[in-house]
Image 1 (cartoon, rainbow, N blue to C red):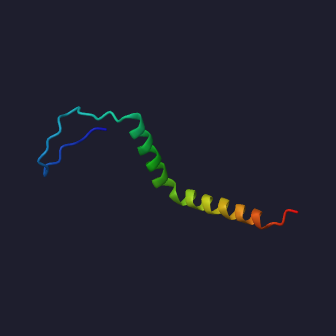
Image 2: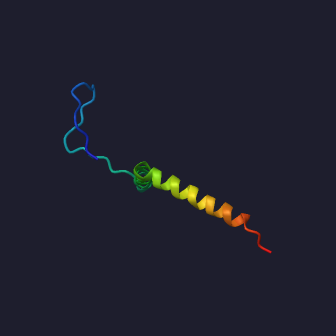
Length: 62
């Protein structure tokens, strides 16, 4: 990830300065990004699976 200088900031970033994230940080950032892009799908799928499981439990198994 590269940073650009903000004219209103007190901090100055040198050109070519990059941050190498730890693999766990990259994984966490990827998971959070995936959730932020697909939260509607994830919630709808979760509700559908839970509803199907509750429906399955309501069927008498004798």
